[in-house]
Length: 175
Image (cartoon, rainbow, N blue to C red):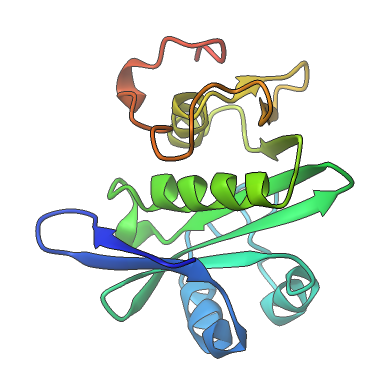
């Protein structure tokens, strides 16, 4: 499944499953990614090639804005749960790239029959926490983790993320 739409005024983007043809673009995106290693050590500061090789075992997704790679996400399953991770290049933040990746990845996770998805981030990464909250994720006892029960969540991936992330008043209340 590939999604084509517009992020902002007349800007085209494509979300799709990553393939070997995306490797050079991923290396280029991560070579200038900031903050480097700032989110729990990811993306790694060194040996990005090895990290990408390791991630190739899992479903990876990319977002291109016009011809430039703007974001990368992955679903790392373990049984009927999976970790979701999203990285958006700083040149494309606040343009709904993360939302598009999350929408696509949650849909794919449901298609894979996963029961629950979760993610981790720094507790002060408010943009990520607001995004997760807008999709119905809740914070867990671990201050770094947020989780979504895919079977209990009433939101479909098509309507998820529609809440105003700046006025998030859900169970992952930000402090």
